[in-house]
Length: 268
Length: 272
Image (cartoon, rainbow over all chains, first blue to last red; front, top):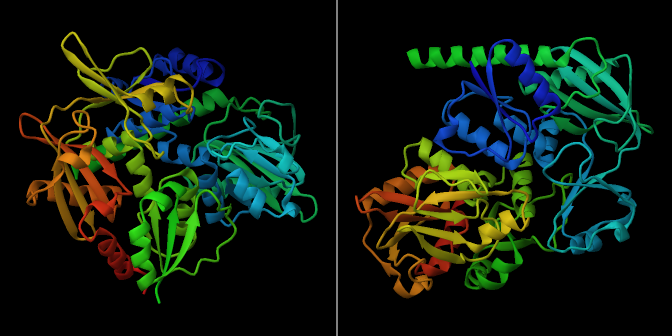
């Protein structure tokens, strides 16, 4: 079997899963933005893994799916997890809390935003994790580029968790606020309310694995989902199961399921 | 009186909708959501409009439309899906090709890797901003290679977050055909392609309806969720009409009575 991996890098989790599949006798090719051309020549693999969500890789995902080549996780959900406003709609549609969001150019923010909303967090609209994230305490903290549209979230003060899931196996750690996925964390016993959120999220969007960043607000004890991911690095996975082999296996199972569905559909 | 929300950017407000607004204000209450001065609060849902009309394609406008669609039942023309697919040349080409509508061959390649065809035009993959084509034309070993300055700047000079080129196979055509559609109505024109004569209006003439193009536009509107559009076609030497551009914010001032036709259509489509 030939497997393509769409990834921004050839190292870390991508390298590990490649090695896992190669040990099983599969052919694996990694496509990054350096070697990825999107045209009919790409249709040379049985299926693709969409590890990263850079624009070029998402384009490849859409192109492959249009040509009936399975992409796992699928491109639509990967895009929506990466697009913070789309992600907030996904969160809201399940009835979960997400921080209040503002969008606007600097002049509009200065004119319209009440100071009582500070502190805010500025984030890229397309992004995940801590890349490009900045704490904004006042209007002075903005980079005054009036061509730029700022995406701002109300800061939720509380305990921060990263909740990974692989199938029904949930692994939750407490972490420091506003740090990246790789910063040190402490494994905790899974709180039942967070477990419920994770399982509902996974079921609703038919996900095999992923992560949610959740904050328990100090004053209200309410849980807020502040970030979602369709394919994290699992660098802080502290639970027993090996994420690489587990994810490698369930991706193959999902691929087989998609192919079986395609065969049944073609027979009809 | 029907309430119409106009979601617009400064460029379109100042340059493209004067006559339209004058007419609209005689038949409806108009509220304006201007990209440059609007602060979008995603928890704020106090819309009382009967319909929204979008003239622009910027990020804030697009997300405002998504919010309205997600949280209300107020019709929006055009939808966020339509706006997105029209400004994203790659995604619309993928979708149209899959549905069997002829589009020029296309390829995305990292800078330095050539596409699988020799005559091509490099276009900006995301046509979201309000600026015109700036072509650089050259012949290499007898092959025509055109590049749009905007596309080069966005990919090479780091103006956008991508470093690749979107190549479209060059289709040689004597005329560029343009079909406007507002609801169920269609308007047909042709002009000399802008690469030959950048002053497109100088050569534009109204033509008799072409049923084949009408059918294609109907199919495109359904696929891309468009209510109001203009679609450009190039006709190859073997008489195939290729879609070269689909626009979600067409300049309807070029149609006779265009502003009135669009205004009346919006009233007709408004939430009952």
